[in-house]
Length: 328
Image (cartoon, rainbow, N blue to C red; front, side):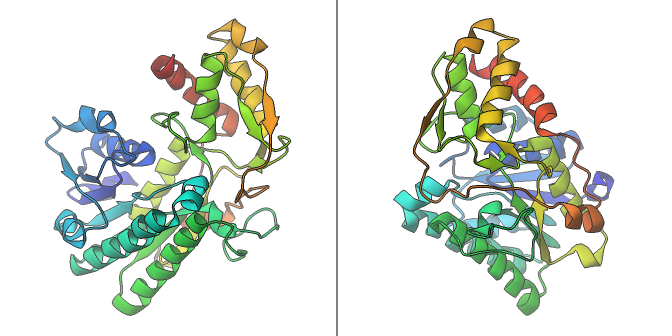
């Protein structure tokens, strides 16, 4: 599928971040001209340093809240993979204004810049948080509830804007509702670190991981390579029926937080047997958290030929090896 991108230029916003840098790496390894736009608010310079000597790679340090920066980045670009955003439900609760500015105003800037540069397709990171208070499982794209956080509102508004830009201006878009992505280069540090790298780092330091709630909350944890595959399918599909809609990006299996900590302990113990003795602790649930998340991936399989290769166990085994090499 990636052969169709030969002689094309792909812009990855948030390209120095966890998902963005993995996308850049995959594109460059296939000799595809890649532009990275990042303001390094959450992205890391070290994530793109290996690419700087590659003649096919261009780094633009800039903020999507600046329309002129977005227009510059989109010049002569064929496809946009828009990953730039301020993630985290707790961050959005603590600072809804900045989350709104980046995730909505910045998103709108990128849509306008893509429209004005005649970008062929705009693929963007949506979120499973859009399902909100809907209790139905598995999550099906057409059935959502009310948002439970400012972050969830911003990601839903992204979907509405993308739909309007197609209907009004003819810009082809695809939204990818990510479900708890994990893998190499995911940052374990900071107040809003994702749960898997945070737990890994705690185990490595013999610190007790804290689970919010009683451990029964569940997630459809999704390995980074499944996400990369989905992004590539989204920008290369020739199926017109697959455009201008949203898709779940997941594996389609549910894992409780207690099961997750057990798996991490098991895999990390292969590197350090003392980790087996680290105790898991529990505390109150966190505001804005969805109790259960499980994706239906039938739509993606049908329209985009999505075929995720990594279950949570397979993904964790690879991820833990990377984390151990880079965090221990």
